[in-house]
Length: 285
Image (cartoon, rainbow, N blue to C red):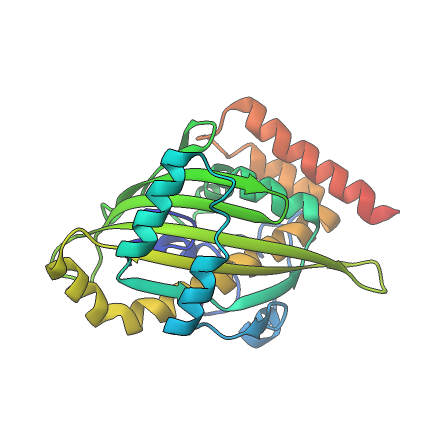
């Protein structure tokens, strides 16, 4: 799907959440000051609840296309998005998931995904790179040679729309695959009776390819890539939940982690530390 080269739900993200053993390397074993809870995979994964199954149906694709927030885009951007949707060979609505987090934590990483990727690198769980090149533009690359660009078309409370262009190189393919993708993410927050906030996230993808040859290859492996991307999305949700817990319970661990974020400018590290401090104080009230 070339998703690994173009945005967070990629091959690198699969390594950036929960390993098969149920514990991210160093994430849940970061020393005495870091989160030290060790749970079985099922216990950890139960923290992310799938409320709607993934689907690639034609009926849902039509609904998803109609619900895209295209009216708020400038004419040129709207035409780009409409063309991509019309040309898309593949559509996928990933599993809709819910998980406990704090709105300020989820918003921070959605607005600054390069910080999340830098955290993964510091924790030695990914060699994925994501660099901000403009206010709403990022360049991505992975250790397998995959590369891509991400351009945020619109973002407002609870909704994000982005176009991604990338070249994916992976073990499933004899050659690289070039693709364009339109990502539509929606998020809702619900506060429970206990005061805890749960996020409900839904991600829809439209993926287009430059030639019928590439499209055919992508269709052949789509049953496998669909499963990978679906799993990625749940893993990212779990990572977000665990980072929220770390900020609430182990701010010293987060402080230590920020010192290792070599790819980030000092002011970005300061922002992450400040967020962690605010979350910790809020959790004590």
